[in-house]
Image (tube, rainbow, N blue to C red):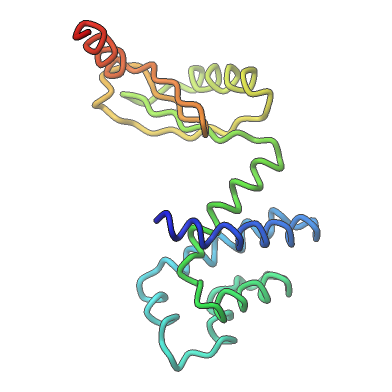
Length: 175
């Protein structure tokens, strides 16, 4: 996976630069998500690897109908360099670059049970205040946390779960 990210990073940066210069970052975001979904499909993956499939046909399979010429050229470059398998990683890295440019922090809140909307809004407001940026929150449920929540916002992880508190207590008692 690390090698895939290393190979995908320059393509994601190039895609973002092209999209930003054209003022079409949202369009490219959707187009990359579509292409990544197609490339990750096992049946499409087998078809894309077929030696008799031409570059134009591969690009036609990967590109959404509304894709602009720059995006189709970008896909052509990926097909030519046999990097189509990197599309999911490229799309993910592109989204990270777009969020950074838009000054948006993506946070994942994992809780022991489903959190009420009011609590999510309070967490979102606290994160917005801490980072000084807009915050996009996604949620997950992990019953093994016992209670509380773990907030993962990029480089910052805030573990307020009972499981984490018990582990810290156990460590301090053992010392």
